[in-house]
Length: 273
Image 1 (cartoon, one colour):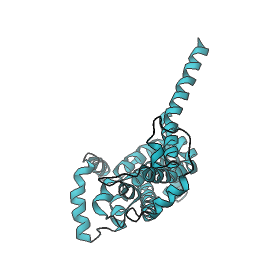
Image 2 (cartoon, one colour; image 1 turned 90 degrees about the horizontal axis):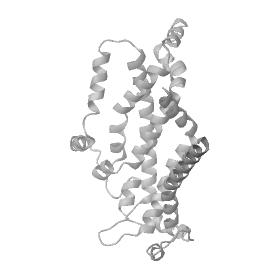
Image 3 (cartoon, rainbow, N blue to C red; image 1 turned 135 degrees about the vertical axis):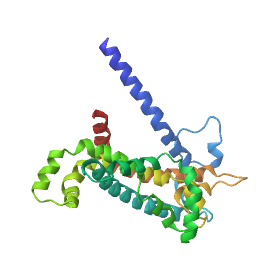
């Protein structure tokens, strides 16, 4: 009976793995084929030899500005991720472990901002950017997102459980300042949670499409905006779109590989708690 149960678990895992990996494999297959081949029935399941040519045409597409889109997305994603992780960890530590007047009221204000749909904030945010003269400038997709209410709430919950009060009191007795306490004692304990927050922030910033489409123009795009320029009203070159999507997936995979151990540790720690 136990053997049958284990077999069912392994079968479920294998099916889940195949269903998860196949879209990425199909993306790679289409990116290596020509437009004539990917329209055939049955569709090709083996990679072809056109990847280099497709990538060359992708970077040479004048209307897409794909290389600039990659650079802009990388700069914006790294800047937003570093800022969100730092300020969310700092604010989460303050809300979880420091005692100050108005703490609960301020936390409620932070949580209240999460109740407003993102789409409702686009028009006021656009008007602010116009007042600042930041239309079609990269700081318009960076500065408004340097702090995240969700990140503050997540790190506050994590710090509440990951940092013992006794550890803070011991550091205080040793003469550690509040910021020194955050840097030397709290930050190492928050590292798994910060890794999870960093991954989510990097992914959401990298994949953001609506706000860059509203505030930027076609000659200064992000990578998702650039990919949308490959599709016109009358013709869509799917090999270029899939080649671009394949390249745009690489940074996300690199981030997951580099911080995978911390991310899994943070997720498992949260699940156990």
